[in-house]
Image (cartoon, rainbow, N blue to C red; front, side, top):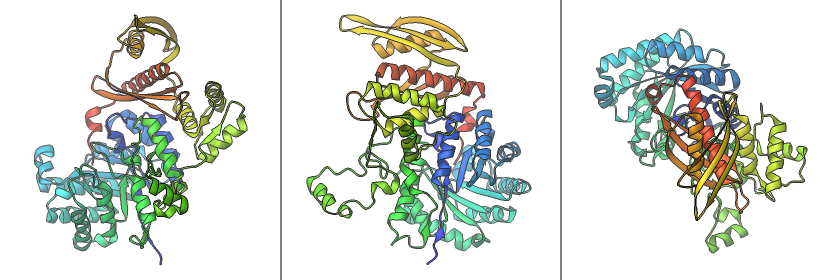
Length: 517
């Protein structure tokens, strides 16, 4: 039996980036976009072009880069938004615009201060205007799950007449439950004039932990596109988790017998790891599909069952999602060929990476620890992939501390090509290190979050530090990895400061960026 295609609309670069601290710079977005193409998603929502110069540029570059997916920019029902969105995707092989307006009475009254008729007129005008320039127009009724049904039918019907080819009914605040949300799609498909001529899309947030369940209920009731993110990242509690929807469809073929996705499932785990490395948002150990415990078995009876027959307690195999059981890979005697071969085996995209520098970092790491694991390689290549023309560079760090003395740090940095050396004391080694970096850069942002984790096991493991800083209303994260946790901490802060400088250079407008579905 021929199965319907459920398109995977990935909004990691737009809605996912609205997760606090998940902001990515342009080079990082390029890296994720390349991986999304390898993952074989159908649609990439690359950003909100009108929100800032940086977002416009990132959408433009992603659009020019990928060849298979449709590339969209989000836009409000405003001429300037739509013009910038069209301009940003003009070099895409498959360009499109995603237009949205809020439709629930609570949003109309308290956010937009518009009547239903005014919102309807704005939606129709915007879709018709965009249709003059592009064929692929998606229209979203923000907060659809709390919108009066008859009004929803009216606005969707008019959007179809104006030229929309995909209609999205978002559960913007994660309010819906599966039975209700699935029934909404069934009623819309049966009631909206022309509803059988367009594709229906589900966009869910996870405030009640129901985003995946709601999306699957929508599929069962005729939705043929799901809007989701890698690792389920997104505003508040996050978005629908791409990997969970894809593997639910793949694993439960008995329930979803009439649908399938195009996603290359073996790229799921590499995609998850890459995003975690780029954003610094670690994957919870108990996260379905991609968490460290997803295929771990602690209970003796479970271990016994798995050893006898995997399907007793494993409904999926690790290799189905790209988890390689051969995790111990390289050592200090491994050569360049083995290094590159392992990267290719892992599916790591090293396009644009200075492989000489990456290999030197690998050899330096291999000299410090007995074994280099896949996670170490991902960290090295990811960091090298997103290096740009940084304003700040850490050249030297020396920290002294004891139980009888105040911790003291000496740091040498390059700032805009000029070298500076300074020192400071602090409450701890990290505090001392951060204080001297603040002195040299002349910036003292608020440290909102600081976290440390081990990339792999063992006392010689690389430590990965993530810090979240805020300054003048801008929130950025930084990551650093090193076998010395103080050095990793310094690298993380410098990385964050470089992102801050880049966002200031592009004139980021935080207020606009936060608006969306």
